[in-house]
Every structure is written in C-alpha cells, then in structure tokens.
Image 1 (cartoon, rainbow, N blue to C red):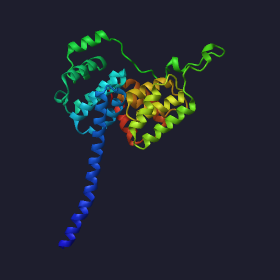
Image 2: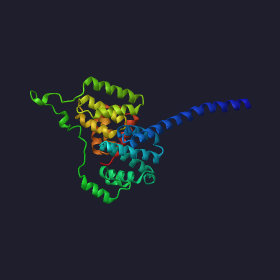
Image 3: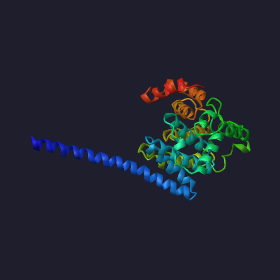
Image 4: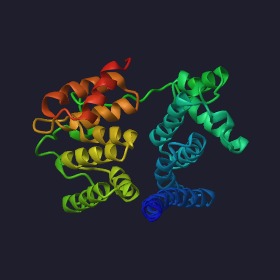
Length: 302
C-alpha cells in the first residue's frame, strides 16, 4: 500500500513539474520581450520597441499594473513613430483594464511619462475614457480646442475614392501609381505573414503587416487580406486603416464584412460595426466567436 501511494505521488510530480516549467517558460518569454522592448525604447529605437512591447503585453493580461505599464510604453512608442491610431488603441486597452479594476494611478512610471500619457489621452480619446486615466476637464478642453477634427472610418458602401475609383481610359492617370509593389512580392509577404500567424508567431506576422500597410498602393484584394490579417493580430486600428485602403467590399468578398465589423467595434465605431455585421451574417458560419461578437456589437450604444 505504501509503495502504491509513493508511486502515485511520483507520477503526480512528473505531471506537475513539466506544467510548471512550461508556465515559467511562457512568462519568461514575455518578460524577455518586455526587457528587449524597453531597451529599444531607451535607445529611441521606437519601431522595434513598439513591436516587442505590444507583443509582450499579451503575457501580462492577468497582472493589470504590469499590463498597463507595458501599454503605456507601447502608446509612447507609437506616438513617437507618428502612429496616432496605434497610440489610441493602446490607450483604449489601458482604459479597458481600468474598467475592470482601477490601477493606473498606482502604476509606477516617471511623472513626465504619466503627464505625456494624459496629454495623449486628452487629444485622442473621448472625454469619458480619458477621465479614467486622470485627465482633467481643463486638459480635455485644451486638447479639443487644439485639435477639433475627428477621424471617421470610410463606410464600405462609400469607398475611399482616391484608392478605388476607376480611372478614365486614355488619360495620364491610367498609369500604375508610382512605387506600387509587385503583386507577386505582396502575395509572398502576405502568405508568409499568414503562416506566421497560424503558427502563433504574432510578432513576425505583425512586422510584415506593418510594412505592407505603409506601402503607397496595394491592390484591392491584397488590402483586404492585409486587413483581415491585422484583425487576426488584434491590431484593430490598423485593420480599419487597411479596410479603408481596400475600399468597397464586393460580391464574393462578404466574409470580410465580419472582420471589418470586429475592427470597427474594437475601435468604438459601433454604428459602422453594426452595418458591417449585418452585411456579413448571411454569408458566414455562426461560430461561438461570431455569436459572441454579434451579441456585443448589437448591444453596443451608437
């Protein structure tokens, strides 16, 4: 009896130790990403800092103070790269965490960093959201006076004319836009990103998608694939931008309405999200994820 009990205890140890080691390895992976990202940030290398820190944040979603600290520096890196949509997205993640459990006032960051984050929140977020990060009414009023314009996503039924409108034949404008990447190169890069995403290598996929998004001209189909991929990495602000590049979603492409709806919902464009979801529903399978998003989108207040 004693030997049998000992045998069971040893078997239990053999099962527990690998699981513990795996958990530690996963945590170490995200901590290393965070450390490398902060080193890049300190060296003013904001491109790699943004990519590594954004990926590192996924490893700290159950540690709110750490998660918010990482997202602070993701937002700052994005801002210093001139990417306002990415900055807004990171700020919204902090806001979402604050709604679960307020921690931002206790997060240990330098005073000048906190001040910069508040200024960015005042400029880029609605008043209710920015207030959760400690932004005062005076800061909100000053930001509104300095930057009164609001960016609204291009609806799929009213395409971005500059990108999608057909050109008149026989005119000089009918030529291919300068600097347009070769279709074969774009297809190869998109395929590489999709393989990386399917394998769980989000940083590699995100780096490829970021580079493609900055291309001066993408064909319609490539832009849709790019948008869907960006939504798959949960970079919803960039997904919206890619859908805007693509223009109108046509017949046979209806499944993309769903990814666009999710991206619009996650960037708080609820009315547009409802429109895209309605266009998608007849053409997609009602999985649990789709049903969950359908419930959230249809319940969202415009």
